[in-house]
Length: 322
Image 1 (cartoon, rainbow, N blue to C red):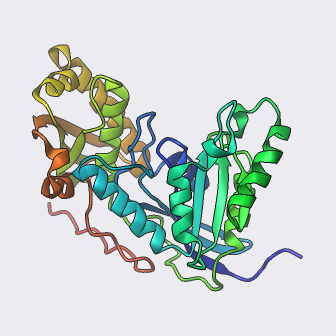
Image 2 (image 1 turned 90 degrees about the vertical axis):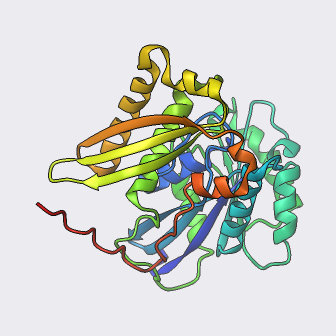
């Protein structure tokens, strides 16, 4: 008999960098909320997105956490602390791992994953394992021994093979998570995320920078929003791209400003798609030497604004004069 009782709760999405956590969040929500790039440590702070359904009644507050890794600077340490905080506040932990062609159990559940699982063994918090990128396997039969070995290493509440990019079995994953949530609905029905639009505007600019500089500029790029004004017919945004070295500034700008223009065009299109209105976007580039090693600058430059409490509607935007 299908489940009809309402359930809701927090589900932390955890895993190493580049296993598809942000892609999965976007797939579940049916829209792009978290940026995703091939570079590790793209996600820099916990991003919440609320999945809701009416039949059956469910609310799952997914929290996309920074990738599990061994930190080497102040930025890395901040990412790890954010990930731990998101995981510890969750009702359910969703551990995401990724397959490659010849993956073994030690590839799926390596030292980072086992360290996390060891910390959760005695906490009573259910853990669901999502094995992502199953489209890489020539045969699904190859999964069976991996599923058995994974269950032997940890008492998972569920193990679900998926493709976050293609959407394969994501519905089954939601079922597995929902079955572990407490009863009742606890979130505002209009709530999608706890971050303001300006946060996502900065993230989309950063994504455009990463994708258009590829290996030329490392992941030490930050974006700040200097101005975010909603006018009658468009939203006016002024943002600054912060790089760590003088040489990176020229790479971001490009010859005659060509690359910066490409970055601005792509970011503007993505922001318009997100907020569903026209956008004027002006970009600047500046250097902040060694910012990733400075805890204070890390706090300033990585979007750690105060989030809206879950269950509380965001306050209405102030009316524009004129």
